[in-house]
Image 1 (tube, rainbow, N blue to C red):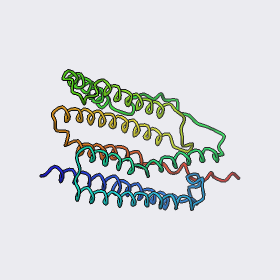
Image 2 (cartoon, rainbow, N blue to C red; image 1 turned 90 degrees about the vertical axis):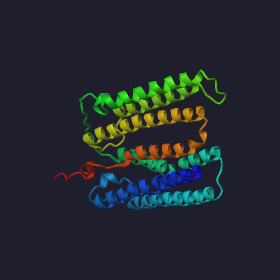
Image 3 (cartoon, rainbow, N blue to C red; image 1 turned 45 degrees about the vertical axis):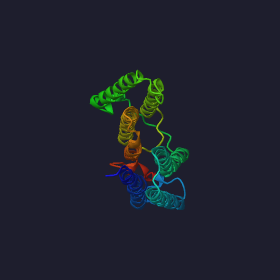
Image 4 (tube, helix red, strand yellow; image 1 turned 120 degrees about the vertical axis):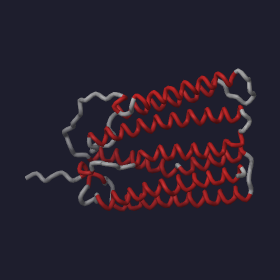
Length: 280
């Protein structure tokens, strides 16, 4: 199969996965929550007027439909007029950042909702769980070991490639970049484990699941990013860099599939959002 056909099929997969399939699941879930746990029965879930949430659901859907339409136009343009690998790389990455814009808006909106919930929260009694939290409560030692082995293997690969003195090779900057990324992910996990709870109504079991999900997302993202950078270096070293756009698109799709796990409601306890019982 010609290389440009392979790239276009993979890029089409990125368009459909990140701007249609995954957002549709989130959109359907938002509608389900709004229609099942209504403002009348679960008022603590809705610190703003009802119209705000109806508008937010429509906005999220429309933004993703726009990104889907834009992606299909880009796909058609690339299919008719194939470009070199560097242009394809820029288009894949640039479009992926645009695809994630609705997700960024959703995250910002969620943070604002949590702040409003805290502001209107009338409870004067706070509860806290005294059970200590440890990393291996949220990920298995095996998964942690795989992450460490992946990082060590990446460092060894960089050290091996460096001896050939390729003019394009970034050398130790690759190690520095991956190390900084991992330190950032580690800080995010620690903040989730020991930081203040953002949602004042969140049940303890839901928070534990949220920490577990965030930890796994950080770990799998670390592995994916490390493997991708290593693969990029290897493709360049073996002079098959023209395959990079295919793997870059697959990498973006992997990041999206991992990241969207944060929006699954699973077994969320929505009873905590019910109105307080009347005191007689």
